[in-house]
Length: 209
Image 1 (cartoon, rainbow, N blue to C red):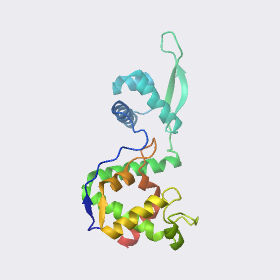
Image 2 (spheres, rainbow, N blue to C red):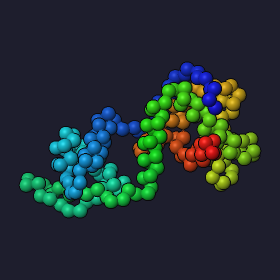
Image 3 (spheres, one colour):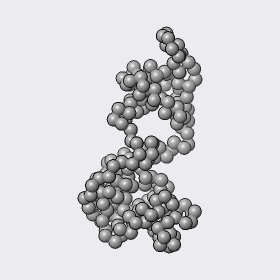
Image 4 (cartoon, rainbow, N blue to C red):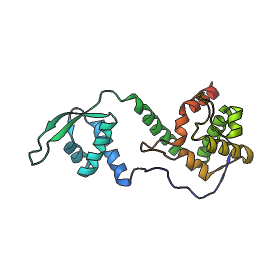
């Protein structure tokens, strides 16, 4: 829907717990280290290069280990009292379940490069497409009754149907609607609309074909 206009409303707060400024800085620093480094490494190696605190680096490495992106292969004495340091290596293969995280990163970059009007148009077009994929009785009840992999999930059906019908009726996309559907909903920062990326990708391919 490329002719959607905007209506100024108060921006709503972000749902969930986004990373703090310090955590984002650490995340970027550790990711830069991993991209440039080959072979084994310890948290101390990361701290020297990334210039981040011991605690924030340790938390980030723990998160990467949970996600299967790095793994412990050995222990190394620090020469001081206390536990030996863990020695890590990068995993050769990224876990399949993290493909969604990579797609979301790409999506966030694409959205950041768009104008606000383009983001409005994207949200409008996406919601209307998902609405049209709903079965008639789902539209009537604003629910998701059929497990057919089309349209909104049960959790989003009421809000998605309501927003899509408002957009179709008023030809207006509000700031609040854009924020709601593009804002992150979990610790990985996945946008709410990204749970429908496969359906939306099929729409884009059909339009381009």
